[in-house]
Image 1 (cartoon, rainbow, N blue to C red):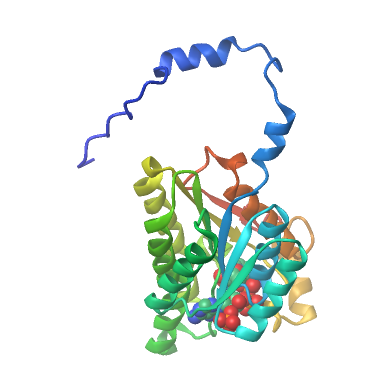
Image 2: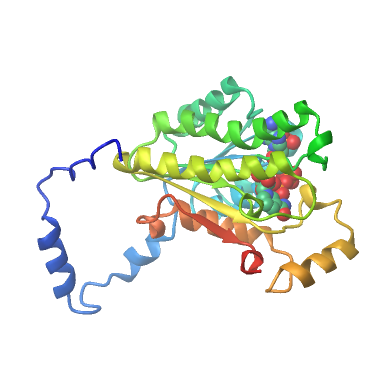
Amino acid sequence: MENPTPDAPRGSGPGPEQALEETMSTAIGEDFDADRWRARFRLDGKVAVVTGASSGLGVAIALGMAAAGADVAIGARRVDRLQETRKAVERLGRRCIAVPTDVTVIEDCTRLVESAVNEFGRVDILVNNAGIGGEYHQATEDPPEHFRHVVDVNLFGSYWMAQAAGRVMQPGSAVVNISSVLAVTTAKVPAAGYSAAKAGILGLTRDLAAQWGRKGIRVNAIMPGVFPTEATAHYSPNYKRKLIDARIPLGRIGDPEEIASTAVFLASDAAAYITGVAVAVDGGVLLL
Ligand code: NDP
């Protein structure tokens, strides 16, 4: 290690041994506060920025954040579809702004975060969900522009968004990056750019988690398995059946709300001691 381990933060609180002693001596259930416990799983008073919320998992994530109590700023390129998500969030009783955003454009990323701050006063949560699957090209035939574009949207876009959010986030904030099981396994179809970008997101997650831990900003990733969205709409029923039989121990495709609930958990104080990890939400794909 080139850098020495930084000193523990100096404060007026108990030292580690005293804190441990207090933890150990607490009688079970004595100071358990059920309301405080339930509040850990809520996002009341928080502001979430969700990219790629014009379709698929991003819509479910935006609605999940709102149902848990957060106001939401959403970004994507298809403005009409974003407005539909905005109305759905508002039907849940939360505030929402829809900001036209191409995550490959740094200024767009900055504007999405600034719009959230201008409208709601803060950003507590960023969900980097915008992504594209790309085309299937054998590596020897893969057009350079295709590879570059897939990495540009999936990986670079996540970093530009994280940079913009990291500049304004306060302690207690959280970033959730949407990676893929293809970061750590293969689909047996050629997807070099996508796999590389999604694996890159795991590296990004670890590095930002380490950089920002002392700032009180947590950074985690979700690795979805297979979910019914526009990105997978071209899968034939036969292919899906084979996929389920061969690769998914739970025996079914996922429900987008299962990604949303994981994102809400990772963004919430219920996950306050979790940072730098990648959670597979995949029905067991990675077991096989
Ligand atoms: P969709 O195609 O339904 O959604 C993708 C979203 O990303 C859309 O809202 C799209 O909005 C947005 N997007 C694409 N390019 C850009 C861009 N340049 N700037 C801003 N937004 C962009 O697919 P999913 O919901 O399935 O995908 C969501 C995430 O989940 C992606 O990161 C994907 O890789 C990941 N994932 C999905 C899996 C699945 O099985 N569905 C499995 C593993 C991971 P617009 O076109 O309006 O810009």
